[in-house]
Image 1 (cartoon, rainbow, N blue to C red):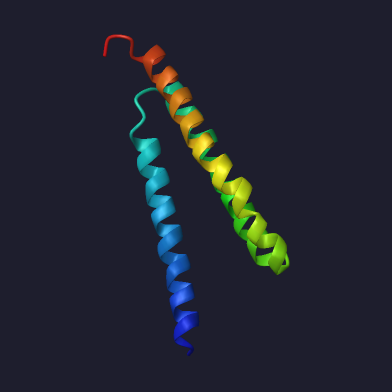
Image 2: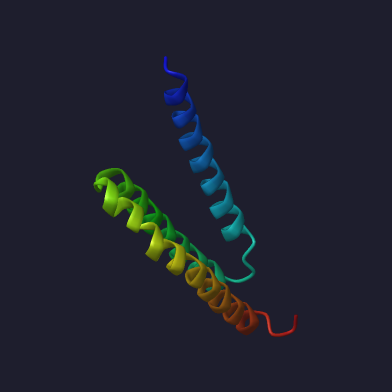
Length: 98
Protein backbone atom coordinates (compact mmCIF):
# COMPACT_ATOMS: atom_id res chain seq x y z
CA UNK A 1 0.00 0.00 0.00
CA UNK A 2 1.07 3.57 -0.68
CA UNK A 3 2.51 5.32 2.43
CA UNK A 4 0.67 8.53 1.51
CA UNK A 5 -2.65 6.70 1.45
CA UNK A 6 -1.93 5.08 4.80
CA UNK A 7 -0.98 8.46 6.28
CA UNK A 8 -4.11 10.07 4.85
CA UNK A 9 -6.37 7.38 6.29
CA UNK A 10 -4.59 7.52 9.65
CA UNK A 11 -4.90 11.33 9.69
CA UNK A 12 -8.62 11.18 9.02
CA UNK A 13 -9.15 8.59 11.76
CA UNK A 14 -7.04 10.51 14.30
CA UNK A 15 -8.73 13.81 13.38
CA UNK A 16 -12.24 12.39 13.72
CA UNK A 17 -11.34 10.70 17.00
CA UNK A 18 -9.97 13.98 18.36
CA UNK A 19 -13.09 15.84 17.24
CA UNK A 20 -15.38 13.28 18.86
CA UNK A 21 -13.40 13.28 22.11
CA UNK A 22 -13.31 17.10 22.17
CA UNK A 23 -17.04 17.37 21.50
CA UNK A 24 -17.82 14.83 24.22
CA UNK A 25 -15.58 16.66 26.71
CA UNK A 26 -17.21 20.00 25.89
CA UNK A 27 -20.69 18.57 26.45
CA UNK A 28 -19.63 16.72 29.60
CA UNK A 29 -18.16 19.91 31.14
CA UNK A 30 -21.41 21.88 30.97
CA UNK A 31 -22.96 22.86 34.29
CA UNK A 32 -26.69 23.01 33.62
CA UNK A 33 -29.41 21.67 31.33
CA UNK A 34 -29.75 24.84 29.21
CA UNK A 35 -26.01 25.07 28.76
CA UNK A 36 -25.87 21.42 27.78
CA UNK A 37 -28.71 21.82 25.27
CA UNK A 38 -27.00 24.85 23.72
CA UNK A 39 -23.66 23.04 23.56
CA UNK A 40 -25.19 20.00 21.85
CA UNK A 41 -26.94 22.19 19.25
CA UNK A 42 -23.85 24.31 18.65
CA UNK A 43 -21.61 21.24 18.39
CA UNK A 44 -23.96 19.65 15.87
CA UNK A 45 -23.92 22.86 13.82
CA UNK A 46 -20.11 23.05 13.92
CA UNK A 47 -19.81 19.40 12.81
CA UNK A 48 -22.16 20.03 9.88
CA UNK A 49 -20.31 23.19 8.82
CA UNK A 50 -16.94 21.46 9.18
CA UNK A 51 -18.02 18.48 7.09
CA UNK A 52 -19.51 20.81 4.47
CA UNK A 53 -16.24 22.77 4.35
CA UNK A 54 -14.17 19.61 3.90
CA UNK A 55 -16.56 18.29 1.25
CA UNK A 56 -16.30 21.54 -0.68
CA UNK A 57 -12.50 21.40 -0.44
CA UNK A 58 -12.59 17.97 -2.08
CA UNK A 59 -15.20 18.76 -4.74
CA UNK A 60 -14.45 22.29 -5.94
CA UNK A 61 -11.84 22.91 -8.63
CA UNK A 62 -8.44 24.22 -7.60
CA UNK A 63 -8.77 27.99 -7.79
CA UNK A 64 -12.09 28.03 -5.91
CA UNK A 65 -11.25 25.62 -3.15
CA UNK A 66 -8.35 27.78 -2.02
CA UNK A 67 -10.70 30.76 -1.76
CA UNK A 68 -12.83 28.81 0.75
CA UNK A 69 -10.13 29.42 3.34
CA UNK A 70 -10.81 33.17 3.35
CA UNK A 71 -14.38 33.06 4.77
CA UNK A 72 -13.50 30.04 6.91
CA UNK A 73 -10.56 31.87 8.48
CA UNK A 74 -12.72 34.91 9.20
CA UNK A 75 -15.92 33.19 10.33
CA UNK A 76 -14.30 30.53 12.55
CA UNK A 77 -12.73 32.91 15.13
CA UNK A 78 -15.88 35.05 15.30
CA UNK A 79 -18.00 31.91 15.70
CA UNK A 80 -15.82 30.70 18.57
CA UNK A 81 -16.03 34.08 20.31
CA UNK A 82 -19.83 34.18 19.86
CA UNK A 83 -20.21 30.60 21.15
CA UNK A 84 -18.15 31.41 24.25
CA UNK A 85 -20.16 34.57 25.00
CA UNK A 86 -23.50 32.79 24.66
CA UNK A 87 -22.32 29.86 26.76
CA UNK A 88 -21.00 32.20 29.44
CA UNK A 89 -24.33 34.07 29.60
CA UNK A 90 -26.23 30.80 29.94
CA UNK A 91 -23.82 29.63 32.64
CA UNK A 92 -24.21 32.89 34.59
CA UNK A 93 -28.03 32.59 34.46
CA UNK A 94 -28.06 28.94 35.50
CA UNK A 95 -25.51 29.20 38.31
CA UNK A 96 -25.92 32.69 39.81
CA UNK A 97 -24.18 31.83 43.13
CA UNK A 98 -20.84 30.84 41.60
